[in-house]
Image 1 (tube, rainbow, N blue to C red):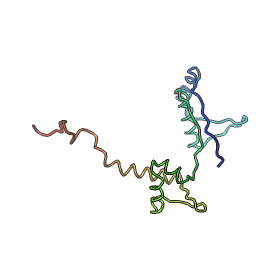
Image 2 (cartoon, rainbow, N blue to C red; image 1 turned 90 degrees about the horizontal axis):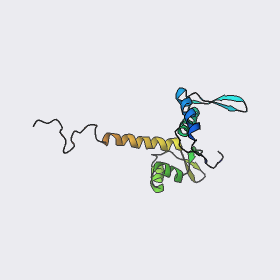
Image 3 (cartoon, rainbow, N blue to C red; image 1 turned 90 degrees about the vertical axis):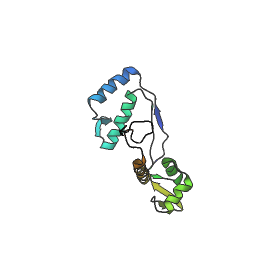
Length: 144
């Protein structure tokens, strides 16, 4: 993958944002034309383009950047929001799969994201149930 600098685009003026918003509301079908030739985008690419256009139509500025599939340990730790040393411990324990390029560790973005989803799933049962049962100062339906 060639490293490219991120590209930013300013928010669209209202006279351009409005028609774009209406077009996206009517259809999320996006066809890209390159040199007069129509190209149908795969679903994930189409979703990314529609999201970009929707943000522009909402008056947001946007930035496009490339995402590397293989991450350095520093990049993976930053993505996961953990320390570099903790990430190394996770790879040493086999919790996170790692590939070696010489003596350098590389992690797949998808593995780090899956590990993060697993961490979130483990925390969900610990969150308070909906409603006010057991909350001090509220009526939990007990007889008076």
